[in-house]
Length: 84
Image: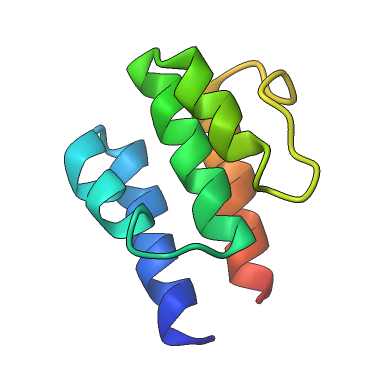
């Protein structure tokens, strides 16, 4: 597991705990697909649909409508990160 993966796992955990700002501070420091996916979900949680879809466009195929809830999506991201 690389340092980026550990940081992104922390961002997901913070988001699951409801600490949007701390999670966003981590996600915005990276520009890989996983960070962009986290960034997209964070803006979905925030209610900023346009910004969220902007980040989804940078996730190599993830879509705004893929998950019913943000928490389900965050758990899916967490599972992907744990496989890296």
